[in-house]
Length: 141
Image 1: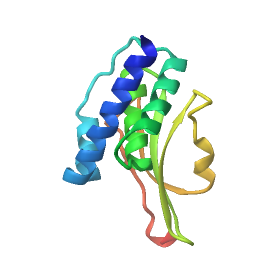
Image 2: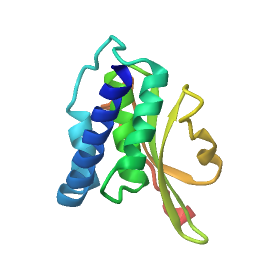
Image 3: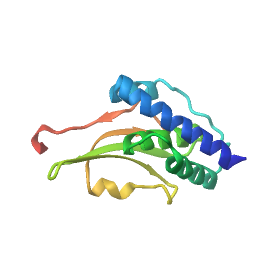
Image 4: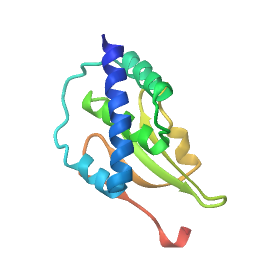
């Protein structure tokens, strides 16, 4: 039952963030995430079910979801289940490339190694969603 719930939630979040990012843009989606307020204190879906349901939803999705939508969906899924996670967006300058990822203590979905490959300019932590961090230094562009 947990894997099925995780799959349905992941599938729904992938659709939701796909539409919202294209309709409203990333700043509006970040403001929506900031407005969510208190997170649930209870983990109602276990770690293996979250991972397997999320990965299955990404494979079976009919939309061409990119790293931004996948990362937003995973971050939301982890945060409503009180798993410590961090949503990050980074860029590489030469050759130019941008990427979004989630850092977590769950080893199978953690992408912390991207911090060494990209200059991180946006971070959303789960503990204080109000502490959205935008960093883009003018001398590094």
